[in-house]
Image 1: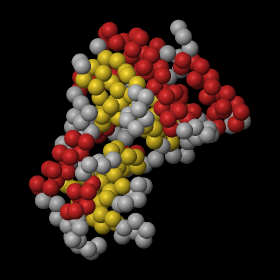
Image 2: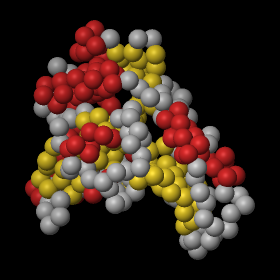
Image 3: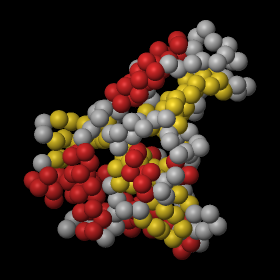
Length: 276
């Protein structure tokens, strides 16, 4: 997994940008999370990434010895973080759901499917210690050169305020797994086996490795995060906090017209890319 030092660099970058720039990621996420715009995800990512590249490459590269590079190959990641002659894949994702995708695990899922190939839906599949260790090893290997930053947004109950958590997975996020459970999801259209991860002191599973054929049910997912995200000690066990939790009030924005909302987004873009 990527070292603590890389995330220490990133924390400095985001802290620097948030304090120095009048409009930054928390404002962008605040607007986009209300979903009034017909925006493709790639456009949203680029909106966030432009000032990030500017801050790292122009303002902080000499201080931290890191920079952001782009690629024209759209089959690969959009960005690379380049530090000490090593390149890491770099992506930003925004979620306002209780479940989000962590990794595709594309090179390993076929192997897990073979494990369950002789099982019926009412079988009890026991994951021995060797298989548990293999799964955790595979996950960490799959994520080893990827920096994924999650902008998680949580709407408060009976409130129009939204909390924004700007986080990345901690390199030790799987170290304290209490037990791993395999179960069969007997769905009519997409029946499949899934592997769930439980941690001490939590009644809900926090990860699910779904083997379903449907893309909506496949891959490695972080689930139930919003039940525990406000517990600072628990959050530190799984995430690097790259920005302090930001509170935004959606009420003023939600009541203006569609045209005004579009103008507000344009204003954010202008502020983000305006030359100094």
